[in-house]
Image 1 (cartoon, rainbow, N blue to C red):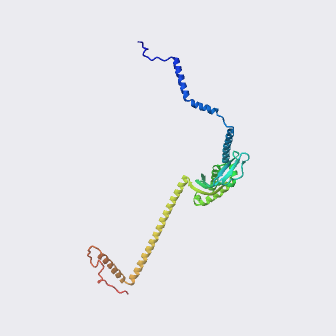
Image 2: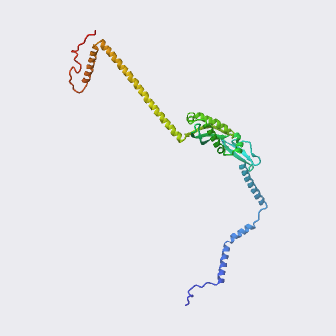
Image 3: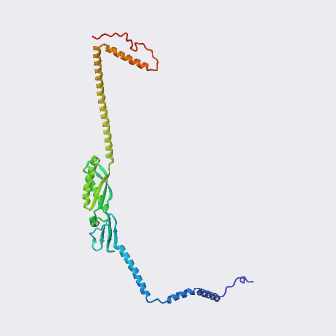
Length: 325
């Protein structure tokens, strides 16, 4: 047997083509119904009035969309605490200021610009010099807002970020001009007067830019390191001087007390001498009093003590009292 007889022979080419055509015919028969439906749909006739209805419906939808777009862009709201101005492409910024509520504008031609007219805090720090050439770091806190009636002018000259354009420069300049009139020590003792002077000058300067300031306060005030050390040394020296003054005053008081005590003792000795000279029995009376005190102390003692009567000055019988002359 040949080696190729065990293998399966391939059918002829024309046989394979015929089988493929048969498979395609079966597939077409299966999906023929769907293809036929599509052909029937293409051949279907449209009623005469249908195009007009569809056109009118499309026009209505387009008109509704245009109306919603126009309504959304023709109205704008101004919230509480805000004011608005309108920019017109033909005339520029209008002079009218729009208050709180809903307002009408022409879309694309006009554009609203909203300002916050509530008081907003601004904190600015600056380093300046005093009259005695000391460096002071001062922090100022202000409450500022734009003038509502002047918002068109504010937008023309300063724009929306008017605080960053104006406040730092005018606050720094005003602080330098006011602080230079006072000494470093006066800034601490006259702080209210300095704050009032800064407020007066700063309000006048801010009105030129159509900005209102309702409150100004000095939040922080610090001096240079050298000045702080000098103040501490001065305070220490003053305390030492006060301590030395106290010592001197105490010595003087002690001296006066010693003099008064000596005068009292001298007066007492003089009086005792006069009493003895006038009446010799005065000494005897004192001896009796001394003996009484000694006896009282020994009687309260827990130890037993044996003393002679002479030690206790109790030999009163032997005393000779002379009558005073």
